Amino acid sequence: MALLVCTPALMATVIVQKNGDVISGRILQERKDRYIFQSPYGKLQIAKANVSKLILDEKQIELQDVKYKDQTVKARLVAQDDKTSVFLTDDGRTIRTDAPTSTATDDKAEKRDTWLFAASGMYGFSTFQRLSTDGPPGFDQAFAAGAFGAQLTGHYTFSPIWGVGVATAFYRHVLVQTVPQPGAPPDYEATAAHASVFVSPSLVVSLLGNLGSKKSAHDIRLEVQPGYSLNEANLDLRFIPPTNPFPASAAAAGKTSAFTLQGQLSYSYSLSESLRLRLGAAYYRVFYDRIFDGTLQNGSAIPGGFTADFERALKSPAQNPQIISITLGAEIGF
Image (cartoon, rainbow, N blue to C red; front, side):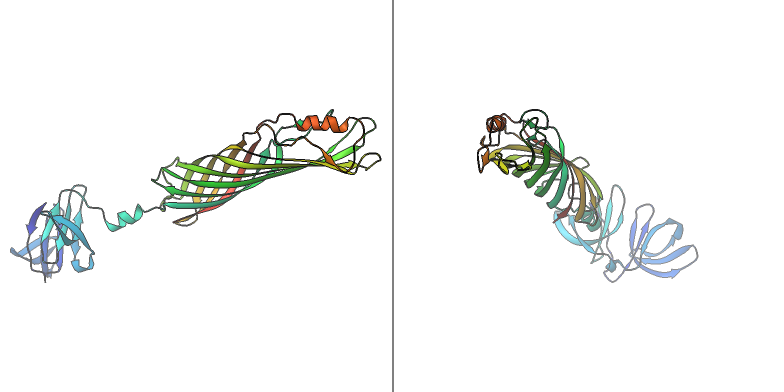
């Protein structure tokens, strides 16, 4: 840094020339092609073609902290290029720095939300156990529509790239089927209801580097959530029609807890600086191989081998249930 010029504080006009020189003083006369300027060197005639900037009252420029000779002084930025910045102090000193200084506007543009809270709804396909409609009693785990869910997440962002937080989600799938029976046993209607409550730590990564950005409208996020879930299943059978000696209904149930993994890919669009719309897809998998307790509950005995066959199916291994869903929600940042 170097001290260039000293001028009295009462001189409030600054001329910045195209060659980088800065002169403080006052304009005595303005002609068509030049200024007659009173400076500390006396009267100068400065061609208008050589003037880059004319500041008639430098007091209107906000004071900034500038380091000068191992001290911090208050000064106003009056000129700047890629290599140097020129400041003017209240007592008329002109100070040049070797590198540009960030302005308040630049700092504001870089501000972002560090806390992100989101709520989303989900709908998709699941592979929860349901009764097979072919052959003897048994279960099928092909993908079926009708899985609904809701999710809450909170993240602290360490940078525009990544952050960590927590997630909780709830999923439910209900499927009603009519199961035909060959021979004498009556057909029956089966309602299979599954629910899963999930809590997990969460890692979020921005693929565009705009996590929490107040400036960029678009972002693509990847979230990975390994956690723990509580799972419940209920199966209700209603015989059609209730024919003696068959009972009117029967039921089976079960509960289990298990390790669960959820992954999400979402697109976010800023509605305002801190409010964003989220649209994406989620994959949810629960790692258990059995949930029903293996006992068919009913008011009276079911004739024949129906109970034994059905309970054998209830005790059969289950494939780890999966849910693939679309997500829609909103996020607010602080």
